[in-house]
Length: 230
Length: 117
Image (tube, rainbow over all chains, first blue to last red; front, side, top):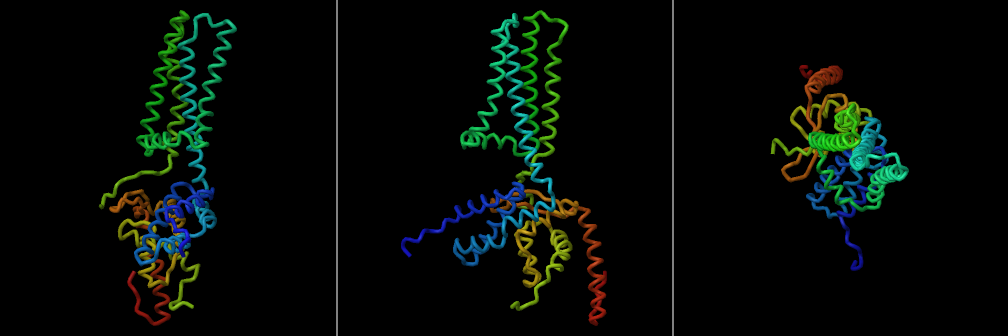
């Protein structure tokens, strides 16, 4: 028929992918695996001479209903989806902790010597509040589909364990250095000699280090090795 | 309905472990290829539901019998490859002995030649 809409294979696969993503029991790694299977199956049917639409529907039926799949997948490893969620939660805690730490350091570097006046105390409170807003602004923008391109590029930085570990360590070392510098300048302005600036710098690195270790441990498998037997 | 008798659900479930271990003993493979191979080798008598293969593979992986790795195939397409671990090799040996024990017992009853274990 003339006005029959043409079947769009990519759109169909995208729809299928979203249906699967709505299934909370299937982790992203498993979804990716099922998608490669669907694509292989489609290609297999196409090779046998079926058209895009027939190939897609047959392949889709072969792979199975997402709800049934979810029930089976979650039986094998009930904690898998939660490991993935905890990973993202910890990543958010790590990043907002880093942002908060930086704001704190900047605050100390800028803090005037006479810090007891109401104005400076109020200024501190406002600055801390503004800094704590940064993660919220980022979260809202991401949810609304902004910053997605930027963050997709950023996730490339952390798409395997060594890279994630390196990025986390660079973050921790940099923010510790900034903290040490800030506290050194603060102590010298305040004429405090009993406290050493290394102390706040190092102690504030312990918590992010623990989170970084957990992140590396929980990281979902995504090793994109090229085939050795190619 | 069927030209050849299909395996019952129970037998499909029970035989999936030795089948998967034996296929992977021949070399690494991925889900789609494994299913194709089983279909061909069984002459269509063993028909696995495609999506349900993965929970079975993941269970074997959880039990340390197989391992997996995402790799790029020659075509540029990424696939999750599975391969046998040393524990899997041992498990396959046990599976083989058990299945041949069943096979030989039935074989004697059905007056067939025994297969050496």
